[in-house]
Every structure is written in structure tokens, then in C-alpha cells.
Image 1 (cartoon, rainbow, N blue to C red):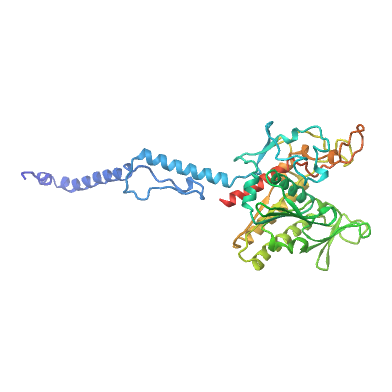
Image 2: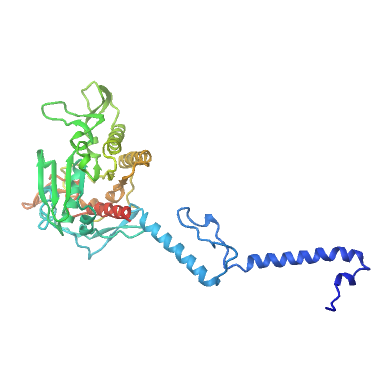
Amino acid sequence: MGLTSPFKEQQPQSWTRKLLPWTIYALASVALFRLYFYSLPFSPPSPDQFSPSLPVLVASSFSSYSPAPALQEDVEEEVEDAASERKSSRCDYIDGKWVHDPSLDPFYNGSSCRTIKDGQNCMAHGRPDLDFLRWRWMPHQCSLPRFDPNSFLGIFRNRHVAFVGDSMARNQLESLLCMLSSVSVPNLVYTNGDDNKFRKWHFPKDNVSISVYWSPFLVKGVEKSSSGPAYNKLFLDSVDERWAADLGSIDMLVLSIGHWFLHPAAYFEGDRVLGCHYCPGSNFTEIGFYDALRKAVRTALKAVSERTRTNFVGKTMDVFLTTFSPSHFEGDWDKFGACSKTRPYGEDEKLVEGMDAEMRKIELEEVQSAKETTEDLVGFRLEALDVTKLSLLRPDGHPGPYMYAFPFADGLKDRVQNDCVHWCLPGPIDAWNEILFAVIKGWSR
């Protein structure tokens, strides 16, 4: 078409003829490089820019092209949504503080709930300061929704929830019963044992059963008595069949032990004596109680998981272990003002340490170990309900002298029996069940 090749025109200059093609090739490569990378709508993020559990959103093909601003906004929005969902479903409810909320009203009181144990009915017994009811637990990472009684009963329709352990298990059970009683009145359908240590309630509308089993060690034990040794006898390798025999009818299990391990006790495995804790006058070797607590928790969790695996194939079993709840005695149990504080501790004012920390550590470690051995067990879910810190911060939540009705009706006394272990109902222990239900709802999603 009349065009002359530029290469022909440069024939006399042989070095130019040799270099020119390479120059053109280099320029073309640069152009292609720029076109390839700088025409893309966005660069794919490095996988380590996001948590491994979040989806890494990248373009499906470098050859596809969409308007850059809109696509980038969509990606950021999806990542934020995924992060938000992960944060809400995996919130650490235990990392938080108590916040004063004057508008907070309890679900129940001593008049509306008939199942409160007399010793924890602080308002009915004349406790004058009621500001301890106006504090709510606030996790740092998320919000803790208020307990929803109707939703709880709906989730556990046709199911059986059992609380097993010592008097703290019973304290938590009665809190839950009262919260549920605000929307549906249960019927007491079974009672047995001294101080009604074995009881069962039924909510007929939703066919929900809630039981309490007295088992202060979770393992087989013989409690001390006036006619026998002055110490408890624990068989650390044998689960307490008073509750374990009913596992086939239980759908959710809440275990709670701790305080009874402070009492004098002798420990056995089979016929072999391991030693004792605080049993002077016996021939047993003093070994403390920490290892006994660990063995008891391990035996209980092993019994639940193994029986679920072998005897109840296909059954759903949810298990919680409530961690140790510290007491707040400031002096003797019968001293006036043994636990007289009227406000919670600040978040950094009181630390979990000493015996409280060690007992919590043992329980958390045993739960984690049991979780690892049951990862393949379909329908089996196990968690620690870690209430040690939030309970430590509430010295104001105990009955104190109001474990009895109107203890100062005839004037102040230097000596009066105090309960600085259990919790007023209503009171801080209601937050335990709010956290319990929040975890359950997270499982249900």
C-alpha cells in the first residue's frame, strides 16, 4: 500500500537493524505488563490479610472486568458482614465488666417465684439495699442480650435439662426456674432426699423438664456424718450413678462442683487409698485436693462422653461445666459485716488468683481435654461456663446475714450467721444463665 518498512530504510546501519527489534519487543512487553496489572478493578488481597476463618474474597478471573468502585465496596461490605457475624457468634462473654443500669428490673422476685430457696430470698428477708439488682454484665467484644424465657422454652421443647453438683448447681437451677416462671409456671413432679436434693419440674406447655441432682463431687462419695469418720470418702474413678444412670433421658447437662472439695476428705481409686485432704488423726497421707478435683471432673466428663458414644448413638447431648464461684468472706462466717459490700469491684480492682485461679484452671483444662477426645462424637457439645471472674467481682450479691429473715429486727448484733458463698435470687447469678443461653443460641444458628 505504498508503505516502506522502516527496517529496510535502516539497512546500511547493521547494528541498528539488530537492536531495533529488541527495543520494540521490550517496549511492547512494558505496555503489556502495564495493561495486565493496572487495568484490573482491584488487586486480590493476600490470604494473611484476613483471619483464616473468614472468606478471602478475590476476583474469579483476571480477565473479567467490572467497574472498580462498586466491586470494591461490595467486597469490603461482605468482609465486614462476615467479621461481624464471626464476632457475635464467637464472643468471649467472660471478658467484660459490671455496668450500673438503674432501669434494669429483674425477671422475678420472692413473690412471683415460688421456687426460691429460703436462704437466698434476700428481698423477702428484709435486705435494705437493692441496688445490687441494677448491675448488668457487659462483655467487651459484644452485647449480651437479656434472657428470653419464651425462646429458651421453645428451644428445649420436649427436652430434659439437668443441673448436677453441689449447692451452687442448685442455686443456678433456681435462678433459671424463676426466670422461666415469669412466662410459664412449672409443676413440681418429683422430690426426694433431705432438703429436696433431688427434684424435677415440668413446664407442660412446652413439655420441658428441669431437674436437679445432688452430687457435690460428681463421683461416688460418702459424706461425713456424726456416726462415721469426720471426713468425706471419695472414689475418684467411679462416677456417681445417682445422676449418671439417668443420662439416657437427659438432653442438656450442667455440672457444677468445687466448694465441697475444701472439706476434709479421703481419696480412693478402687481399693487403693490415694491420700487425704485435711484429715488429722487418720493414717492417710496429706495430698491436698487439687488433684482430686481434677480426677473427679475427668471421671464425670469421661462417663458422659463414653455413655453417649456407646449407649445413646444418634442422641444429642449438650454439656456445660460451670467453673468455680469464689466466696467473699471478710473475716469469720458469723462476724457482723462478713460480706457487707454494696457495690461490685471494678474490672481491675480484683484479680482471679490463688485457690480460685487454680480451681478454675483445672476445670478449664479438663473441659478442653474432653473436647479434644470427643471431636468425632456427632451431636455431643461441651463447653465451660466460665463464671469465676464475673462472680469474683460481685461481693455485693450474697445473702450475708439475710439468709435469715430480718436478722436485725431486734437491733444490730456483733455475731450473726452469714452466707457469703451462695447468691441472692434475683441477683448476679442470673447472668450465668444469660451467658448459658447466649452460647446455646450461638450453637443453634
